[in-house]
Image (cartoon, rainbow, N blue to C red):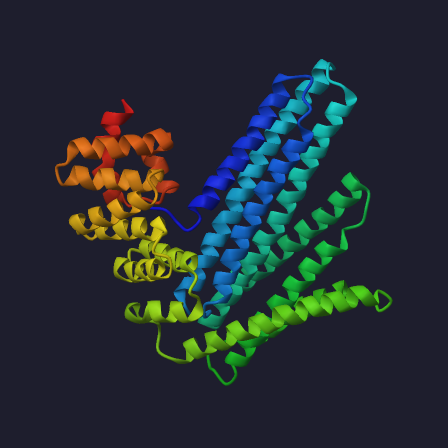
Length: 420
């Protein structure tokens, strides 16, 4: 199964591989001079990560807090940030080992060592930034849960809030110790804009709760006060008039967008809960973005709601019929439902549109094998493995490619044969 981010995944992997290749070159040569290209690949990687995170945030904002999809997107965003932190931490550790080795041998020039130290600092800076985002996302998840249930565990909110303050302090300390400067103003503005976003979410919840029983408004008001106090502490001083105007403009724009999304959310929340059969019209009203529709379908597919997922994939196909991924994902749905012939047809279209897609070739190979077309099945699955050797790995299919247990089981004979 492929998401709208297959190209993004490829780009992420390409950027990571390129970065790792430059790093391997650095380890192997005392004359390494690819600092510019290392930094270019690193910046590309950060850009891809930020673009995908921003798209997920926009998807969350476009959905009512009462919709289960908001929770699903939040959980996905949480996983994306965790994986980013884990990868960058592991990569930084490899650089730390190189530096330790160089220091022990004393055969590398000072300038080369200094460049490595600078690159380690870049990675640490990004890890801190992603860590702050992760805490912010988790607090927003709690606020949405609070809105739905009327209450949350007080200790959970305070714990994450305190953890956020710790990471923010670590970020301040990092800039002071490593770069010998105070925290850049653009980072202060980013956090201030997020605090205003958090404040808007909380205030809207308080308004929606007005007159409702079984809600803990007192606790919410206390937490609102904590956010309010942080906003006041970060607001620019009056003599920084240009910065004040910039912050006010950013916050005003953010609140305007949030209000529009909240208006849609309150309309959705006031009606009956979303049913599967009306999911696509609502999604289409929110966006005619084929990528967003495809991603929404994947969330339903992962929840086992194939009928609804297929509607989203078909909507994505209507918007962008030349794009193979919705065909590929629809085929996985059909296959899991036992509609092997229809799934095979959808996969043939996907492969015709994207002959170099490993996922579509693997899916088509699996489906063909299921209907007795072993020779053609082997050809397509061989193409998939040639493009992506991980398609013989069961755990990778389960955890990274998001294949269902049914698809994993059905593909096992091919994987065993071709993996030998």
